[in-house]
Length: 333
Image (cartoon, rainbow, N blue to C red):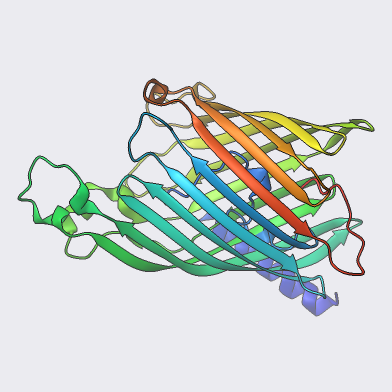
């Protein structure tokens, strides 16, 4: 990279970090196995596996007892170009909660630059649309004469975000904002709903993630990983949330781990690391070098645990090796 291009690149990096620092957010879908489903969270991950990579995930949250509990399905595909500085991807996410569902359709692009031996910096953007639907007329309500709830919401909104992802075969760090665009999720004539429910405004999530691999013996590795999430929701105090995951990789084919999810911040009744949300167990296996199958179970620690029997998540992944190109394995991240 010549001097002019380096200056342009550094300017772009500073500009993007400035956007990330000042961003604010609406609740995005949650994943326990985030480490295998990074593309919907961070566009900078595009092409990071060095091959055509596909992931499909389904999450059923708070099962058995809560009607209309969250359900999330996602599909992603991405690959570097022949000139490996560029990479392209796509993801679709369907997120349901009660009478409301969100459908995200996004194309991702990343420009990747070597920073040193085996280290790459990837700057990614995602752009697409959000199809938001809320079947308000299906709600049971005390005042059936209220016309606001007789009109369902069906909106298509732009979705634009960005992310930075720095990675090495043995570790990674990343920051991202999946969507920068704010706005109401209700129709303009539903002013009373908008005023009474500020959470129905789109804002921006901020995500930060990191992970690594610690070899212990030839067939045993320790893998600590974490993800932090923050929402600057309009008119609300939202606590900071973190997932801490520790897993053990056996002969590069079986991964067994556990996570602790907690929130902390300045809002009432929230003390540092004393407001646990859930503990999670995860298991991933690689029947072949390219096929991955994963499952996780979340046990709720908050008061919501009195009303549900946990959450289930399954993920399926496949990496396609390019012809005439060595397929490096294992790919830890």
